[in-house]
Amino acid sequence: MSKILTIGEILVEIIAIERGNGFREAVPLIGPFPSGAPAIFIDQVGKLGQDCAIISTVGDDDFGWVNIDRLTRDGVDVSGIEVVPQGTTGSAFVRYREDGSRAFVFNILHSACGQIELNDKTRVLIDGCTHMHVMGTALYAPSVVLSILDAVDRIKAKGGTVSFDPNLRPEILDSPGMREALQTVLSKTDLFMPSGEELFLFANAQTEKEAIDELLAKGIKAVVIKRGQHGASYFDKDTAIDVKGFKVEEIDPTGAGDCFGATFVTFWLNGAAPQDALRYANASGARAVTRAGPMEGASTRAELDALIQSQERS
Image 1 (cartoon, rainbow, N blue to C red):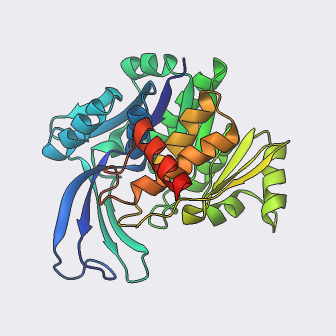
Image 2 (spheres, rainbow, N blue to C red; image 1 turned 60 degrees about the horizontal axis):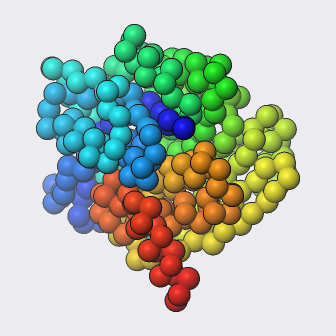
């Protein structure tokens, strides 16, 4: 049976309840919500009943424990999370602009999760996993990059697989070594999962088809393009599939792409046909946007079945 691993930031998210361009004035806030792209991803994997684990670092504070408690409750192996007695758990403050885009203030690099390093215990955990999922957001510090690349190599050496979601945020794209790390991970990727225009950051082509062909020629087995409310597409050397999205009322889009990715990877690893994996992944992303808070919309298999059935009847 597969065991899925991810490495990277665990944060809390604090959300402004009024729309605006940033935080240069006092605004009402809600939170903290458990967050961090790798944490959201692995929480959704756990809620589907899939064996999974995360390696990260948090402070011995309420923000750290709200994450550990949530991940534990949802079935994630948290033995790879180090709790730093004098550390401070990372945070992200987010405010929605009038057009629906988001303005973030991150505390990642200088928080506890900026100190992620592998040790004997976490290497044993890695060796018990068969799939590694890499989030581009996690490539924010040299020690984290080295940890991720070490895990990728160890899992690939045993015949395991790697999925990669670039999940690029403008606020962190220019972190030292980020672009080089993205290319290194891509060279070891089996399943590549960009959102929209992210596809063209990794190819020289001018059209979507040419970009996909270029990526598949590099040895990537499959490409899944996330298209938000419009659904998603799957490509391999023999197949091209488009699956429509679900109509729901959007409350908070943060975490939807992470839930989508977690669901697709889980179904893909368990032998689901690409069309079925896309349908469940679309449902997962759709449910995620109906809740405020990045991890609050993570779904069980039964909840995804109910959404799919309700939309098929309508």
